[in-house]
Length: 304
Image (cartoon, rainbow, N blue to C red; front, side, top):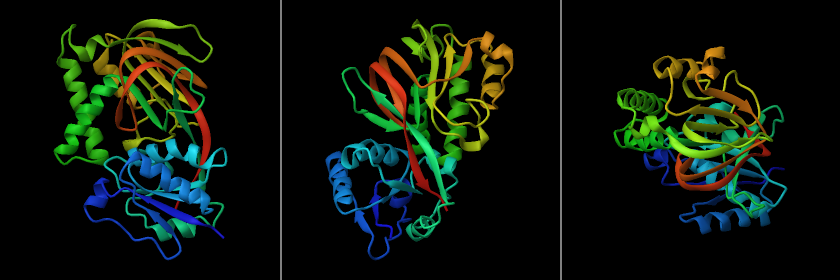
């Protein structure tokens, strides 16, 4: 027997548009409105023996649920399912869960062991913490923060999912190409970075990106061919050979000239960062500081 519960974000894009599907009888349902409500809902699920938590929302809802699930469930995390109803749904795309997936379909799939996939999340931890402050799948700083701000504007213009990604990439590229040496997009952000057990490197960075996702929208391959684990992409500032580098990086090219021009990919267990600016995690912007971004636990997801 599978005991299921649904966390529903009514503010998610498609839920606001009327995409909501009611949970079948016997499935617990929570509609939290505040962060404390979300933890209380997950604690209720844990106490009720819920071993399949269905997340109805976008990437931000997934991030918030995973962050609080560790406290509510402890080390024995439940299986998760995703109903992609947000503005962006990168995790659902990576897992192969289509838009409009109903709760009933996830419940049926949960009974088939072959319809489960494992993904590690990444964790953001600050000094003195043992428990992650955030859990998610896509971390970025530098130009990625400005790109996120740009993406929020494209949402306001009615672009979502792949269309929003295209508009964001084109807008960010045009903004960077047009800027002079002093332009904030080109001059980067000062940060000290250490990858794995490597030495720290203090410099200006155009971009630092980290993810545990395997596949990305539109077939983009910023970390090279799809593979497991925590993957890092860094680009030094000011970015060199940018008009040629952007399409090459996004296509997953492993040409040696990319590394020589300051575009580096690494697979590590963690990275350490110190910077004064901001970072993004799954579409939300947070204050920076001294951070460890590390590979988190393997999570099990039901797919249809």
